[in-house]
Length: 319
Image (cartoon, rainbow, N blue to C red):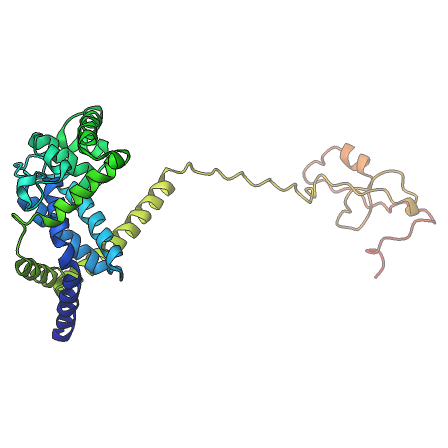
């Protein structure tokens, strides 16, 4: 663990050594956007750590552009979060830079108010659009555009004839030079590096990593639980499906009392035959059905059934 921290500190020191030539410019830019010293310091420190963790570009130009973009974005976020901070910025004038008395842009800007000079720095030094400047200055974008156009006309009259067609470029050059040369109020680089090291150790501690891992696991479990609850709710809210009743099968037999023996063409009988009595004789169905019931104690006389020659004897009469 100590070896990992030592490697991180070495990498941070090497990164800050590359950033140090641009630090004054990006801090002055953050100060102009935030308008407050403390907010600017925090925005620059957050932007530096973000670029360090993501990996800085190899080239000096790429690193500078990345720093400017990150500081611009972080500073705007700070202003949105804390919009009532005290405005302490007062720059972009020729008195702040030695040897700038011959600059016509700084000479013209020195005659403007602090609010106008800040709008000029935000547009030509920090690269903000008119809509973003209007939000910071709490005015309309049309007023910002009108102020910038009026200042460009004033500077054009002060420039030599060969540079009047590139008045915006001249103002940008003067604004960037002021950002790089202005040293009043810029934090000490050594103090900035120590602050970066302390914040890096605090944020990258093992406890913080475990907390982030635990938070990720809890988020995943919560997502699974919510999905299960949603599925259960949909099942409970689904309408019940009614099953159709099974068809009743038709009976495949008839009661024995209602069944009548079908006439057999080979036997010569033309009438259906009733069920055989106990003695084995055959009685026509019509005759059996038309006979009245016998009185109690009366036994019918035994009569031999009339059997034709073509009719075979019943199987019961043959022993």
